[in-house]
Image (cartoon, rainbow, N blue to C red; front, side, top):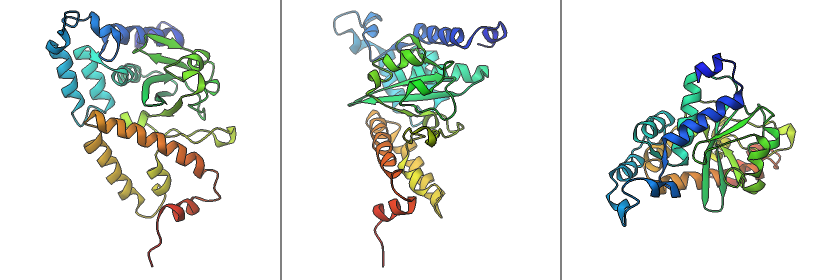
Length: 265
């Protein structure tokens, strides 16, 4: 990546190269291409695929949610799902020190979700509206093997389901050093950020940091290690985004607290 940047390649060209690397490196264990992998092509072959069993075990680790751990595992093992592909793309670009915003977005439509990287998205953009991402923003999606501009992202069924999906920033869930994403409220978009209702309610409240530390610890140690737990995390952020969108229409944050926390006499 550093070499391509030094050669003066465009962001689109570098993004396409990262997509190609991740797509060729990682076998998607939740797509048809896994059936081309030995011994899956044999009858009942997947039952004897140790690599897939190892992937399931990796997903049970409490740190499998972390970007660097997921990226290294996907690179070394050659196995992953969209989450690992996104983490690997993010890792490669971040380690190369590329300029421009680098985020991991997640789309949710019904019970299914999809993780992908967006590189170069403008500050203040609305994750749900690719038209606000900017002309030099590109989706790096190794799971699909696609590099998409803002128009392609809006039309892609996995990224935005033609505009029907709920897209949110998940970068900080994978990379604790990343900044929280905030949209420009003057743009008329809905709040997205980390889509965390707990942070919205308690982030500035007295003692709120202790509450948030407990919640994050529960997320990372109790929920993240299992597939069911990770599904619960995605569902939580989905509900949170809707609740926060509703909350922004209320007069004050205090009024939301008054509604959500019973008064103790």
